[in-house]
Amino acid sequence: MSQLITYLTFNGNCREAMLFYQNCLGGELYFQTLEDSPKTESLPNNYKKYIVQAFLKKENMLLMGTDLFDEDKLLQGNTIAILLKSCNETEIRQYYSSLAEKKTIAFPLKRNHWGHLFGSITDKYGIRWLFSCSKK
Image (cartoon, rainbow, N blue to C red; front, side):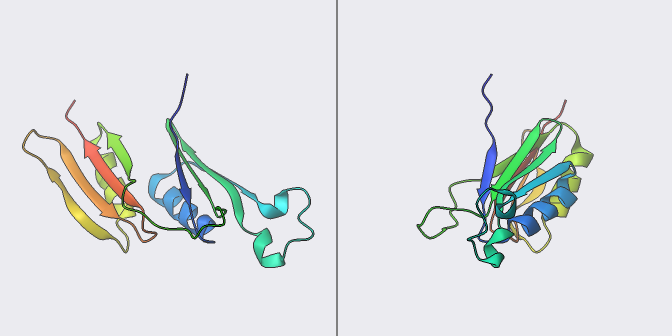
């Protein structure tokens, strides 16, 4: 079975962002730093704390992140969004509210014409989130 996983790249603040997402979404959070990798003695100390991989797992959700990127400059784009979908209205409202800290609201969470809740924000890390809750 294949799995599609959301993988985010940060510019040195992966730990901070993933802790924020864990606080908002819950789940188990794991980090692997450059310091945990072999042959890191030659790296400057400030690089050793960079996150190689972060995993946030909760039920069937998996969010991953890193501080490492190619030699090209890291560019935040607007072509990617994370969709959080739930059948539980209380849960989706709680996710929306907690992720909306220091946010830009693109579309307030509200019921659309066919009865689903939908909304979107860009969080304080520049990540676009979509929220959807359909009636059972």
